[in-house]
Image (cartoon, rainbow, N blue to C red):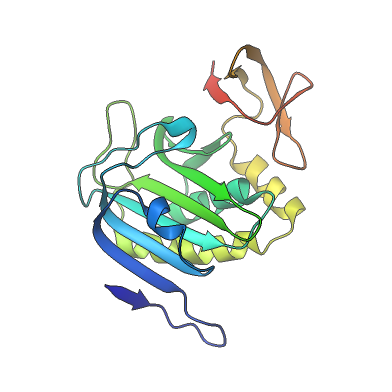
Length: 212
C-alpha cells in the first residue's frame, strides 16, 4: 500500500507501508530520496553492530527514511527522534534513545555517496526486559518524527551539536567504550564537530558505550 502526505509547496514524500518486511532498511535502500518505509513487523530487524532488533507485530514504530547524505545525520536523527518522543527522552551516544534510563529506541544510518537510509525504531506498547516503552500512538508519532527529522536535517551542524549536548545522557558521565580490540574508560567530556565522543581527551568515532 502506498500513501502520501501532501505538503504545500513541496513534493509529498512517498510513504510505503507494509505488514511485514525483513527490515525497513532493506526495502528503503532501493527507493529514491524522500521515501519513507513503515512496517508493523520486521523478521530480521537489526541495530548497530548487527545486533538484532525484535518486537512483536504492531508494538513499535519501525521506519526508515531515505535522505540526502549528511555528515552528522546520526546525531541529527537522534535529536529529531528525542524531540518527537517528547520530554524525558534522552540521548546516549552514538544512537540510543533512553527513557527513565532504559532504552526506548535507536537510530541506524547507512550512507552512500548519493543518499542515506536512516532507520528509527521506538518501543511503543511492548519492550524487552530492562528496556522502556513510550505508549504513544504510532501514526501520530510518525508524523511528529517526519517533521522533526526535516527540521534537524536542515539545521546547521552547530545547531544540531548544541541540541544534542542538551539532550545527552552520556556527557559528563563516566563511561566505558568497548572498541573492536580494546576499551577506554573515562569521563565523556564532549562531542566533536563530526559527532565523535571525546572521552578524557580521546576522540572515539566508533564503539559501544556503557554508562558506569
